[in-house]
Each structure stands twice: as structure tokens, then as C-alpha cells.
Amino acid sequence: MHNTIQRVQCFQCPPPALCTDARDLVQECMVALQPSHLPEAAEILDILNKIEFEGLFYSHDKLATIQGGQPWKMCLAEMWTKDKVQEQVQCGGEQSNCNTRVVKITKHNEPLGATVRNEGERVVIGRVVKGGAAERSGNLHPGDEVLEVNGLKLCGKSVHDICSTLCQMSGTLTFVIIPALSSSPPDETSQPVYHYRAHFSYTPDDDLYIPCHELGISFQRGDILHVISKDDPHWWQAYRDGEWTQTLAGLIPSLALQQHRLALQRQKREQEAREQQQQSPRRKASTASLLCARKPNKRKRHTSPFKRDKCDGIPYEEMALYYPQPNQKRPLILVGPPAIGRHHLRQRLLDDTAKFAAPIPHTSRPKEGGEIDASDYHFVSRGVFEAEAAGAKFLEMGEYDKHFYGTSLDSIRQVVNSGKICVLNLQPTSLPAFHDSDLKPYVVFLTPTSPQASRHQAHKNGAIFKEEEYRDLVAISHTMEEQFGQFFDSVIPFEEVELVLKQLMYEISLLEKEPQWVPAKWVEAPCPGF
Image 1 (cartoon, helix red, strand yellow):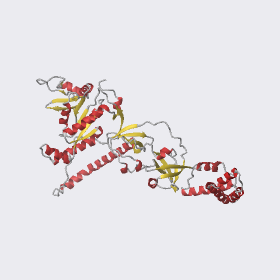
Image 2 (cartoon, rainbow, N blue to C red):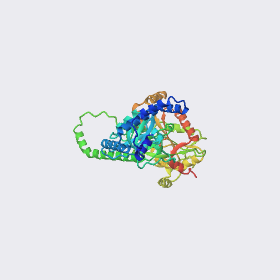
Image 3 (cartoon, one colour):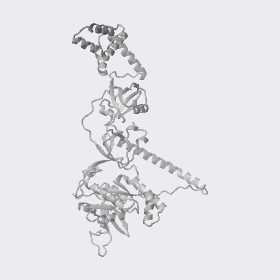
Image 4 (cartoon, helix red, strand yellow):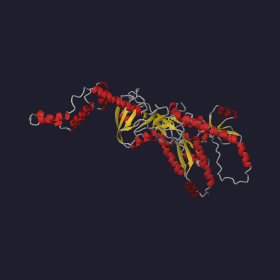
């Protein structure tokens, strides 16, 4: 009704009022019709008695009185001019579009699903989030200017104040908007969904630059995110895996935004390192004069051999669903700090020779009595070993007692092609090369359990629980996870071998019968051995 009246006011001005006493005339008409027994008279009386018509005639007389005998067109022009002057004063003299619309959106116990931004004194829709009340209504679009909500004027208000106000509103919200000049009907064609694995953790409440904290979603490193919109260069719209029942999408930093943030963090660290290096001579001089002072009681930090710049990796990695292949089992990689129990766990798995197998390693040492080539080891000369190492044939290698030992990618492929699960214990530094191969590894990170559980397990085994060794083990574990956590598919606290073995067998059963999210390049790559 509002839009129709607006259209008539702008383009089809009604004729001037013929009288200002319509209600009196109606009363006279009703008095004249009451003695009649005609059904038509009774119908007219019933219509004129309705409260809606009473309000209509009342409004007619009020407007006619305001008109004051002037032609309706002149009256309307005068009223419109007054409104425009008032609007220009309120909005800083900016000229506004007269093509306003009224939009009603029902909002329950959920976010509205739209963000706003300030353009001078104007309040403009920044984005409409998929699945929200605003998107479902189809009446709000990016670029629309919002003049008021439920009678509250928004012109000149800050984004923070508007968001706080809208969060407190519920029920039917009435928006008065000026549609964007370039607004076009939404594209009904389905947009592609992109699947990413996050390589960092994110909490929207800690982000000062997110357009609306209420619309942000938090996630942990390793979570799968289903991105449904990349229209905004800085904020993507996504769902976290396992939460498809949530109708409203959430905002997450885009790839470009997060890379920019990481670059700024790297520059800040480099600048701090340069400043610290410049100040180090002066610190040494001041320390020399304070040799008798009490040393601060700080625990020495463990220096880990696994040093890697956290900004080297990308924030998101594109993923795809991989469906299990009956004769192509994913290799099982066990990673963890030293003395966590990996070797014992691996041996327990390898006892099941029908299901698990280990790759045959290469060595440059001579064959000893009773050893069989290609069964115990692949015995090769030192020159051949060095040539294959130079050709990146080995996933992991080392030297012991002046002889080389290594595990080749081809030996792993032989186990995979045999239909068995290849089990390996690897150092985390080997994971990037394995990740870039075509072998699709499943990496399990074995981490220390709680201090109470570790102390109980040590007493159960008749050993002495050493607090310092436990703290060092936890520190190494944290460093591994920080530097290489993006390659881990599962994290299992190592309490007892039987419990870990049970959890591991359960995960292996899922790998054999359910699809898994893996890097998209693995799905596109051919199967090993073909």
C-alpha cells in the first residue's frame, strides 16, 4: 500500500478534494437509508459502518482541511518540498533519492544477517549473509541506503550504535530504504561451494575489524570450512563442517585478508628482531655491571630442532572428498615427541601381518649373514644411495656408523599397492614432502596426556614420574604441533597402549568405509603405482 501511494504521489497526482465534511455526508446518507427494506441498502449500511471506512473518511476530511481549498497538486508539492528541506538539514544537505521503499522483515532469536557501513552521514547495507532473515526476505541488497528502522532515524548514526540497536530488536522490523541505483535481482543460479581446511584458529570476538561480531564464526586450526560466498574481497561467508543445520552463514577472514595480516605480523617481528639486535651491545654492557644481582627465576625454554616460520604456510588449504579405494589404503604415519610410545604402538600394529606392513628400507652398509636383499633391506652401494638421495627418492634418511639408511617413496608405494596399510614412524620434518606426494598419508600425532594420568601410568609401570622430563616432553609436543599441526589428521593423547590402539583401530575402520576430506590436489592426482 505504501509503495502504491508513493507511486501515485510521484506520478499521478489525485484531483483536489471536493469537500471537507465527508463524515457528515456519510451520516446523512446512513440516516436516509435506514427506513429502506432493500437488500442493497442494508449492504451499503453494513459497509459504511465498518471501522476501516470511518478511518478513511476521517483522514479524507483532515487532508482536505489541510488543503485549505488549494488544488491538491499544489498542496502535495508544498508538503513534499517541506519534507525534502527537513531531510537535507538532517543528512547534511545531501540530496536523497525520492524512490523510497518500506521493507518488513521478521527477526526472531537470530541475527538479522546483514551488515551496514557508513558513507558520510548515510547508512548503507554492506553485505547480506546467506541464510539470514534479510537474505530470505529478498528485500535488502548491498548498496541499499537505510533511512530508518521501526521509526528510528539512522542517518548520521555510527555502525556500532546501529548494530547494538538491531541486536536488541525482534519481531517485525520495518525498514525505510532507498534502493541502490545499480541493484539487480539476485542471481538464482547456485553458486559453487569451496571447501577449505583452516591452518589457523580464529575468534571473531577478538577481531577489531570484523564488520559484525554477531555474524562471525569461530574455528580451530584443522577445521573444515565450507565457503558459500567469496563476493566480498575481505570477508567470506562460510559454514563450519558439521553445522549444516545452522541456516545462517558466518563471516570469516578471506584468504587475501589473512595473508595480509600474516605479512604485517612478519614485518613486525623482523622489525623487533632488528631493534633487539641493535640494543644487544648495550644490554651486554649493563649486564656486566650487575653480575652480583639476583638472577630472575625463569625456567629455561626448550629449544626445538623443528623451527619453521609460521607465516610460510597458507591460511587455508582447498579440500575435496576422497572416497576409500579397496586396494589403495592410505599410509598411516605416527608422529610424536621422543619416548612417547610410537615404536611400541607401531610394532603392535605390525603384528597383524594380514592388515599392516612396513616399507623395506634402503641402506649402504654391506649385507650381513642371514640377511636377504629386498626383504630385510634394499642393499645398495654408497654411490647409488647418494644418487637416489640427490634425486629426492627418499622420504627420510640418516647416517649411522658411517652408513646411510633411508625410506624411499617407492618402497611405500609397494606396500600401498599390495592392499595393506603402510605404517611408518616419521619425524615431523618429513611431513611436508609426504604431503606433497601422491601417497595420501593419514597422520596421527601422539601427544602427552595430562600430568595426573602420566603420573598414574608411571606408578602403574613401576617407574618414577619425573616432573622436569614431563615438562620437556610437553614443550616439544607443543612446538611440533605449532610448526607442523597443519599436517595432522588426528591427535591422540598417549595414556596406555591398549587405549591408543583401540582409538587408532576405530579411526582406521572409518578410513576404510567413509569419505574423508583431503587436499584437493590429492583427489586430482592419479593413484600411486598407476
